Length: 259
Ligand code: CAA
Image 1 (cartoon, protein in one colour):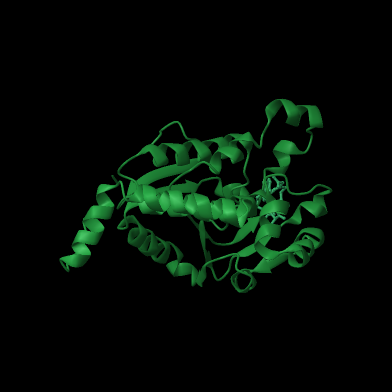
Image 2 (tube, rainbow, N blue to C red):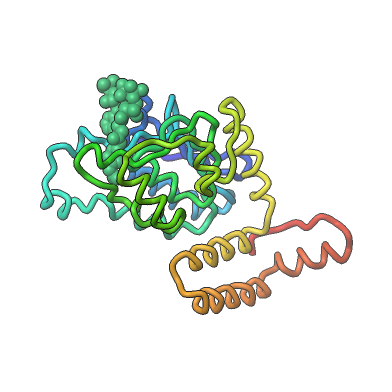
């Protein structure tokens, strides 16, 4: 899509915007530029009306083995303050369309944080997740301590974050980090199949369901319920709601337009 991307490749297939991390020689280690490219691609795909769902995957033998250690090894706090390397991560939370991550091989450190930024996660059976930052004398900086703790609770998050150990796809499934595990050879095919299924749903419903679920993570239940109700009412202003309910009554398949 954007020929200027250096560390990712982007294409649109069957209404699915596919973003592939593309630094396989270093297991897709995320340098600053690459993170900006990923977020820029998400934003372009979010604006593209032909795209209904976004899929994020990694080329080569890993999803992403973390932030680029070589890039940051010599940094000092002032560099970080001036470069503000985590700012693009905040923009990721503003993407309205569902993002599905397809993880194989390593998803470590910043790579795991990127996976946790997705709305749904499908993992190959060989996938390994973890936060090894502690072994480098640092800690996660792109949301890992917060997102993992919200997902797993304090006890398990502490174990993952303090030990720096990696965990299998099976463990990630048992603990609710991933939606399903899939044999590696079928990962992309199966994830695309699921993405196509979502792409057939009314886009406004997807958008407002995503917003409401994210609200549940951060807000109080009463704030979340208020927002959910407003989103529910809002959908009754859409053509797709009229079409969806009319099609049900007429016993035919609805044709959704995203308006
Ligand atoms: N940064 C930079 N380069 C990396 C990298 C990373 N995070 N992970 C792997 N690479 C590079 C290696 O240096 C190696 O490059 P060369 O061929 O030039 O030596 C190449 O990728 C292949 O890696 P290995 O030879 O190490 O492959 P392996 O199969 O033996 O081991 C691994 C795989 C266990 C994932 C190992 O590469 C590893 O431990 N990587 C680092 C994982 C890590 O610590 N991630 C956290 C980074 S910090 C962070 O992410 C902070 C944050 O929250 C934002």
